Image (cartoon, rainbow, N blue to C red; front, top):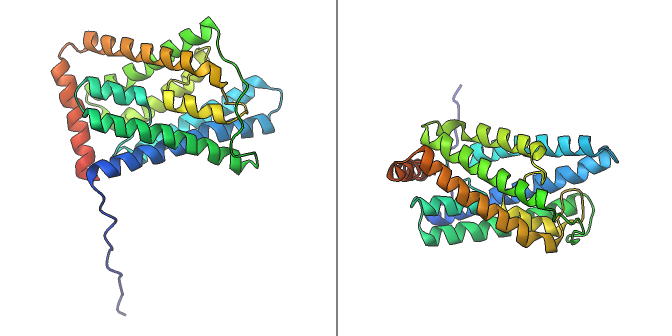
Length: 250
């Protein structure tokens, strides 16, 4: 018996930067849909039990982060403007690349939030009235973002890039619980979560202070990384090598 095989068809060959921008958009979209969607589901399945709702939201978000980083990491998988700015500060990407990635992350997160609303038969956009503005929550965002970047760059610098997805997913799951802000740690998803008046939402008036604290946490993390790994050039080389591996695989 003759076995017939279908010749492999080449994929759509976009320019390298376009592929990376699309990966950042897609990853951000799915991440926001996960965060908001799991929050809506948790509030529906476990009403009036805030602890259980948060546990469900945290576990689902952490698991999705692992999956998304593993799936899109070979192309680009920051999904977070603070991480992208840190990569730019270390010289691993250009200003133009950083700008394109951040735009894709913000648009992707907003699209993901709208998608989550629609999946649960809500209006596409419902501005959140959930105010998050205490001093403790601001400090929580500094801590959450600081820890996230230290984890990412510490894992990369130690030569264990293949496990960065597990490290990030585990950290975010934990940070949902040990930080008072429930660890937004991402300006793009912070902006996007204003578009859903549900469990994961945040009031627009609370966004500027949250984003400022996230940037502060990111800056402190950069300083900590340079203390832990004094050879800044080597940190940049590690990131550049990681980006080169992504280019080869994509």
